Length: 139
Length: 139
DNA sequence: CTGCATCCAATATGATACTG
DNA sequence: CAGTATCATATTGGATGCAG
Image 1: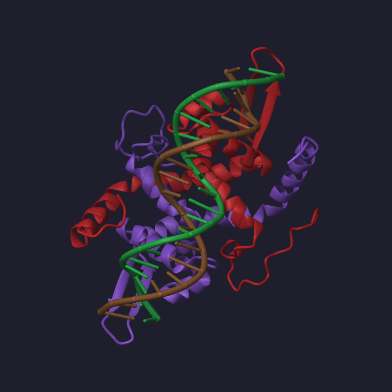
Image 2: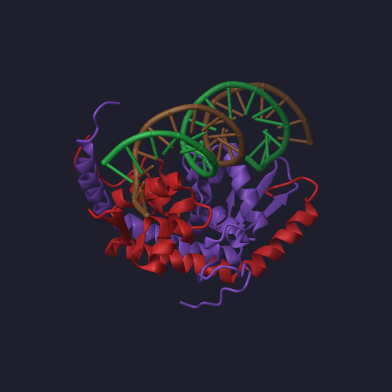
């Protein structure tokens, strides 16, 4: 399987192919929304061009390995561009591609909404934990 | 964008608290954007009120356990409401809360964008794999 | 500094069996 | 139907050491 693997996942009756597990868009969505993917994109949207360790500092808690892995996935998807400069010490800059910026825009809109509504979430959480608090859903 | 993100974490110099690992919004974001969370929300946005097994069928590939777990997390966050009817056989309906619908709206906007741009992603992927393909020495 | 490889721990996930 | 419990496995995440 090489080129032109991009037919629609026609077997779904949904408007969104992501729902189908074999659809490539599902994988991309996971790269974008995944634990580190979303934070990395967010950091790049805010910070513009960033070096590896700058990113590492911004995305609090990410390990070298995960950041590297995340960056590769995003680069492969065409969302992030990587420019290595043959200097010494090496300097590598990462930034969002135009496509990455479009994705970031909508991703950040989502993040912004979630953050703005955290009070409601926290309240809901309290109610839920009270009602079935003795069992547990999530720490 | 409307930066009414409030001071839940405070110690970050970023406009987005999610970047901080201790911030509760990060956990919520993960519930929303996680592998099954995003698909479940998407399914509910499209399908309106759905029963457990209807959801299971729509979110292709999800296991009983994961769907159950996902649903609990989303319910706890106040994004999904659960209405159990004491009939026999039991019937339980899930639907998005108003907050859940707001989240879904932005989430679906993101999904929609990603799907619409998949040709670009696929093209980028081919280029990337070509470049990296040759450095595959052995295993 | 950038980043890959490797070993090990923590989690997430999946199949199955079981209960109400 | 709507879940829960449990076990086995797959994948992820983290720390460390090494290399360009």
